[in-house]
Length: 147
Image (cartoon, rainbow, N blue to C red; front, side, top):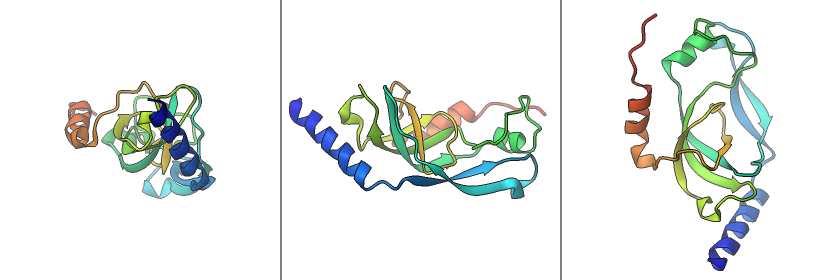
C-alpha cells in the first residue's frame, strides 16, 4: 500500500509540473442564439479536500442546455454560464484525503460547468466506467420533455 501511495504522489507531482496554468472553456454572458457562446481562458481549478480534478475528454450538451442558453428553461441561471452536466475524462489531480489510486482512472460523471478542458468534482461522486458512459447518460437524460 505504501508503494501505491508514493506512486500516486509522484504521478500527481509530475502531472502538476506538466499542467498549464489555464484551460479553455465555453461560456455565455448573455442569452440568445449559438453566437452568444464564447471560447475563453480560465484558471485551471485546484481540487480541495475530498475533490478530484478531471481532464475532460468528452462533454455532453443536452436539449435543456440549449433552452438555458435561450433563457427558455424553467430556471434562469445567473450569468455568466459555463454549460454542461456530464463528462468523461481522466482523473488528473487529487485533493487532500483522496485515494491515490484514482490518479489516471478513466471516469464518467455528472456535475456542472463541463464545457471546459478540466473540472473539479467531489471524489465521492458516482463515477461510472467510460464503457458504461453512453448507456448511463442515455438512461439519465432520456426523459420525456414537454414545452
